[in-house]
Image (tube, rainbow, N blue to C red; front, side, top):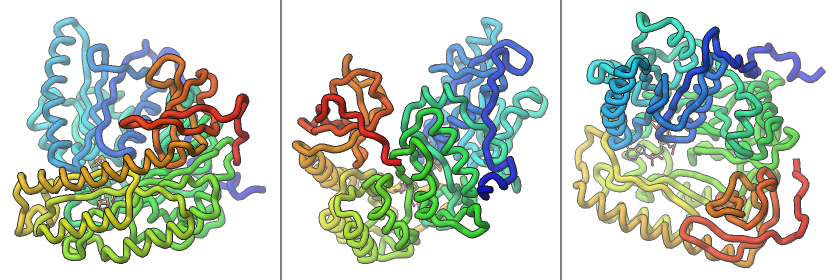
Length: 480
Ligand code: SAH
Ligand code: SF4
Ligand code: F3S
């Protein structure tokens, strides 16, 4: 018997039988607004999945919502500020609905909830409940138990929230489209000196392989073709395998590539120090693993990298990229950059530009350093002037934008496989992603959504490529 079948049932997320009338009443509406990273987006989906059997259907805005959940992000000051301005608006909506005899519950979830839960409750009385990213599985109980017990639930619990989550119904999986997020790892032990994540998400943990595989199977059976494996430090994955050993991300990818229907795998976000030889080899050996890697470096200056506590030098990043390109020559790279970190001189910043010129990125996210309360860098000497940060950011973004456009232009005339995910911008178009994570639009009928098709790229727009199908009936068989 397969060892997968011997695992305790709690490893697999149950699929809810959605009670059409909810838990004993008529169905209600929930509006969930998610900010921040893809892991927050995954959590938002899981909240919706948890609430569906409780009688909640999702709605697109707060006006008709009986329950509003803000799933917040604390990574930069601007992100955290949005919560309070959004709550101001929600307070009004709640009052207007109350005047019409309708009750509204407001929940703040996510990383701001974790970091500033008590403050939120103090500043914004309209908030009924605050739940942290490791506690949201308590939502149904907390909501059911009524206003008396509402409050702040931001403990890092001993229990594993994943044991309490439920799979989405098949219908819901289908609605979400053929590319799906799957969180395999959470938390971070790296403590980069600028970053709040280790404080908001807690210590690193990896889900067991059997639980991940069960969720992947469920998703595939609902029509998912691409899994995006998520973790704050996804390549630090070290989950328990069905053989009782610790499995690496490379091994997990090989396992998930075997799930029937799964044609593509991606993972994000990685740390350079956790890119091991097996994972690099997987980019050579595993056709399902897409040739796109988001590998944040933050800075090209050794002094800044050291002050950031990134624990590697710029040369190590360059060497790593060379190894990865040797394994998979066509791999497209992306990164995150922070400009204006405390102590960053013009020469340090130039070193970052030089690294960008040397490596060549297909995409990049870049940010002005934002001092975050409780992180060591916020207290550091040499805080960089805001105008200087703005100017450096513009220079850096010019450079990477040029690289991105050149990378996209070089696709013209090439034929690439595209996984079609949704209707296109215009009638008669469908849209999908190239292996290199570029958005691609073609004229084709909607029934091809969910297929991986070869597409010849014939043009480049600002944010997407345009293509045409190369075969009249070119529906490729999945490689899995
Ligand atoms: N775990 C990932 C990144 C998580 S946060 C990693 O190790 O790279 C996403 C990005 O936000 C980071 O890569 C960083 O570029 C940016 N970021 C994090 N904290 C920041 C801060 N205080 N100010 C500006 N940007 C920040
Ligand atoms: Fe934050 Fe660093 Fe952890 Fe990434 S590795 S989540 S930047 S502390
Ligand atoms: Fe933001 Fe939390 Fe993600 S701080 S980036 S939502 S881990």
